[in-house]
Length: 271
Image 1 (cartoon, one colour):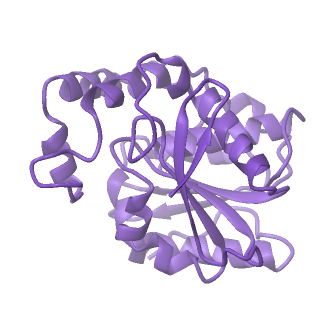
Image 2 (tube, rainbow, N blue to C red):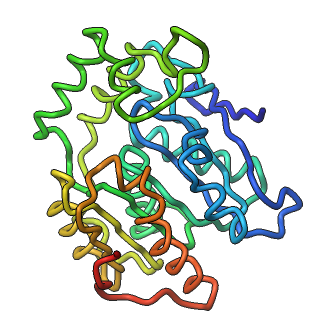
């Protein structure tokens, strides 16, 4: 187990999968709400991508084996982006790729906006899965999630996503931490307007049955040359768990990055 303590005192757990000697190009992978870094492995993403990348699977604050802070600060999107850059520095990584699903996708957009305005370095290529770059405070479903977490529904939500508990009768994550993560997320101002100057290759992938599908499409359109992939018949969570539908487009994009330049423009819907 590897840990990194951020500037705001939150200890992040992360796992490096693949070529630990450093020959594989590093890629940070950040999951969504109520998941953990281990879900990348269980869903099949590690098997799909570890042959072409050295994967750094990070547990978000309040998730997996990372700390469960008692204040909102460490859960903020800006704070998590700072931690990704801090882990990169601690590992001596100068350049990295990034893939984020759902909540992890918001962190990816935050990193991208920083690179676009010259406030950060290191990001080489970006994959955003099932997410947009707009401020989320107007999304009623987030308030509903907070109610569900504090109303004792976390175990049922985990079962609905097919997640396994760490031990019989226990949830993978802490419901109060999940609620605080959503509350902190609602303070994020969004970065869609700041992505126009981003030079890095970007792919945005979303299921057509995801309620935020159109917003994700609009965010992709705000990034010059971004590759947009629509998944017919796929909803929000399936964009992550239906690796058979999502992974081919991601693998193709990363292979194009390795081939000195990802293809831009809008991709044909993945099948």
